[in-house]
Amino acid sequence: MPTRLLHTHAGILCDRDAQLSHFLSSQQYRELVAQCKTCDRDQQKELIHTEVSRYFQYVTLSHRWGVGEPSLRDIVGQKIYSMSATGGLGKLQGFCAVACEWDYLWAWSDTCCIDKYSSAEVQETIGSMFAWYRQSALTIVYLSDVPDTGSLGSSKWLTRGWTLQELLAPRTVLFYTQNWTLYKNLTSSNHKMDVAVLEELEKETRIEPRFLTDFSPGIDDARSRLQWASLRRTTRPEDTIYSLFGIFNVHLPVLYGESAEHALGRLLTEIVSQSGDISVLDWVGEPSPFHSCFPAHITSYQRLPTPPPYRDAEEQSPAI
Image: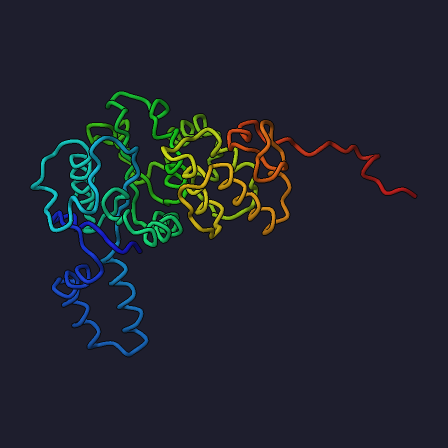
């Protein structure tokens, strides 16, 4: 669970202590205390776990960064609903308002819920972000460049590096257009289960629906995962690689300032050392200064993986 969350009703950013304070003063807490008085110890543990988990359900935002995104320092101690609704603040207000409409008390955004001046916190966040999106009750995808009658496939959200894990990790996703209208006015509570949306996503991302709806992080089928990422870009080149750490479920240091070639080399080395999967050596392009067996750029994986050579029945039969 993220360290900081936005209280969607009050519009304030809360650290762990503030979150706990809100819980201890809530009606849910008073009802929990009353229920625990009639339970044995094992029942109390189960009840406490259930009710606390329910109270702290949170919504995550997935979006493409724009001009004027609010930072932690911009909103700490402020009520976001009282601030100017321009640029990124307007987006943050819209996100929290939608979370409220879906009856969620807590929300998380990568713009203002992280102290980007703390290298330790940035490292922790990059290592935890996949899990945070996976554990969220709902992920709201805001398509700032898609009008109400527009198409998901035209959005630059599909071209950004960090949004790949934000597409794969959540179990429940809702797409919203630039005016905070549900995409195509779909009334489904989870657009990941909408056949038409899945067809659009598969066409644009080349990711099979089975991965879109039930993705498991790890190093299995590494070559295909690299191909998914090969068409995406980030503002900082090395972030293209860091954004994959959660997808591959690897724990590597984040070294801002290193080249993207070096970051990719470290990731590929980890994949090969953990799995022995040499399919990551199937690429076309410029060799890396990190190691000549690796590509210099992740774009070298844009070509679909080479299928294994066909062996006919005669070749497969053992010699007698």
